[in-house]
Length: 380
Image (cartoon, rainbow, N blue to C red; front, side, top):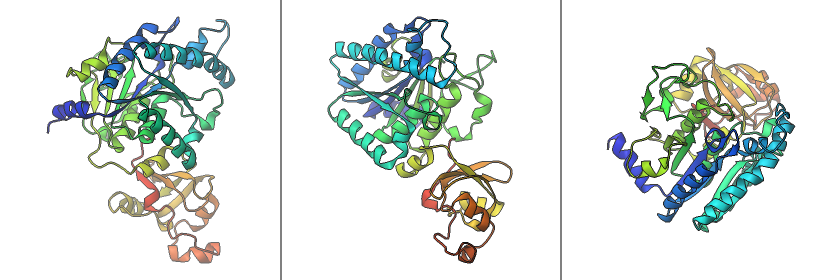
């Protein structure tokens, strides 16, 4: 099947879709774009009538709140942005609730922090709640809980949040509505000769740093965060469609067969949802530097990482924390849950597993990271 036919068939077969809309699309200098919310609700209502489950990840709370406070107030620290979000979130949800109600649909508000998805128990609770809402044909509207998040509990941007929600709700399509007309081979704001890309067959082969730079004026993401989210979605086996969210009825048009935006093809072989969860629930706490032999064992052999292949340890971490696996030349190879703390890892790096007990007094694990807790080519 051709990539074009695959896109058409996937859109036709989609039963559960995560739609992410960013601040740059949703708001203007005057506040929330009510006309755009109405058009969005109209399009999603049409899909909903076809039996499609819709999950909406929406930015815009901070931008909506900014217009309700004196213009002299600067949102230059975390408490100020959180306060603006507290003002704007209720206004944003009110507009969503009222607009979707006109189409006969019920919405729900779901606010999350990274800690909610870091804990496996809370992750499962979130999954069960969202599953029940979808069973009831409710449209969950998800945003980061900005008012209580601290830096280490932030997703960083709602593209990252959306990429995690794909796993929570077991979606089969990701639509990211952005201010750009899809993906270009280089930044069109700086390069007039930039060319639009209609289909990306292997996102892992792209140099995202070279293609994408900068952030939008009112958002926290930019195209890099959208492409990173698409990279993660591809690993999960979920295709991504990046669309110009301000174009009129853009979602309806693509589902009617018009080839708009950029279609990002998922991997043929997807990672397990458990590995996806462990790789992306938090930022790595440190690095394990490995030699060429260990690199080959991981990349080509699908092996666990043994202490013998580790040449250096960066950072301070506890056993069970997420760490990055890096080659000597600085290439990020994988992330995984370490079996040992950084202090113990420094003592046993470079030695055979049979020697661990004589060094530490016990050998809890022969591996530094077991392959079941390791994800190669993580999109960080």
